[in-house]
Image 1 (spheres, rainbow, N blue to C red):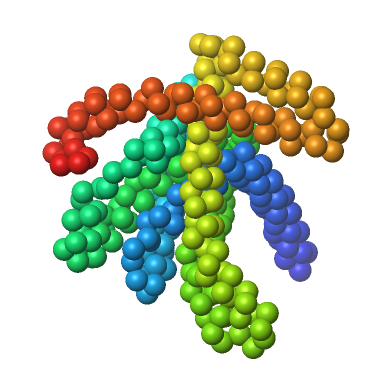
Image 2: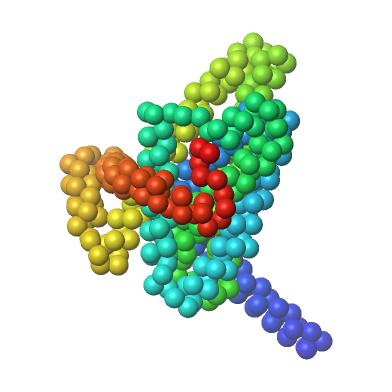
Length: 325
């Protein structure tokens, strides 16, 4: 009997340690998720475009496929690679993060560029005109998962950069929790966004009260504006997150700290001139604005490099057709 009681005491002690570790993992995951919030916003804002043009019955299946691909990106591909890199070559984390930041700057600047000089995607147009929606769906899902890989890499790398857990188990647990929670949150929100007009249409016809039917009509009319706002927010998030990552990386590795230091000095000065209740938001807003301008400048510089050098080189190596052909 005494042996059984001793065993139960040991089990209870192990359970307490495990519970404490889970609490630590949860706290670290929350901190990492907050740090990656800008990229998360971008991820949520970018994804709805991939279901545009499909029937309502295909929207949720497409989002589900993209969500599974996103989780695979984070858990199976990125998490082991980042943990290995952290153990073997930790100095490479910041340059990789900066490379992803450059990609975000390029994507954001390209979106702005094409908003002023729009042109159709010939491959997508051809798929629509031939009625080959199955091929278009495969193309959209593959493109979404590819874009998600870059954003997921940023999220996971940012998460790893703020995780200071003592053991590999704790680091892996934190990253896994970040991966699952962010993927569920982002694609759950995306599913709700893309189905909101259908929900509104149902409410406008079947709600039991006049207010409910009016709210349904408002949802139907308002969702196109919501999608435009999301697209704008997504582009802004790409630029300010990408600019911040690049400038912070340049300062962190000691190449050029002046822009990063100057932005934070201006932001702190602006915050000090404001009432205390709005000082924190003012500092964030000024920092994000300057980071966004820096991100736009970096992205505009990268557009000709990406389209005239990297794109054709990648097409030659992989055998893919360059864009527009």
